[in-house]
Image: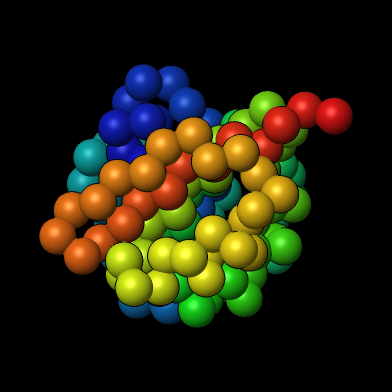
Length: 120
């Protein structure tokens, strides 16, 4: 997120863990950067839609919040999902089958899926 901000992107961040939220604040401060929004909670509290949404969460949680992640992604935007064990990949794919899978990467047993939300 810091690299994207340094390139001029608007950044909104959320985490359900209060320690992670504090750590995020500290990292941005140490790097003399600002974020546009940061909240403790899940993506369902997003007040906007985004060109790119990144979720690095275990597969079961990704499936549980799939509707909210898709709702937060703008039409024509990208949804990047990581933190997925390869043995759980198919279950995640089922939850996002209405999006277009653009790319899949595998490192050891960890999968990242990049989806595009098509314009209607």
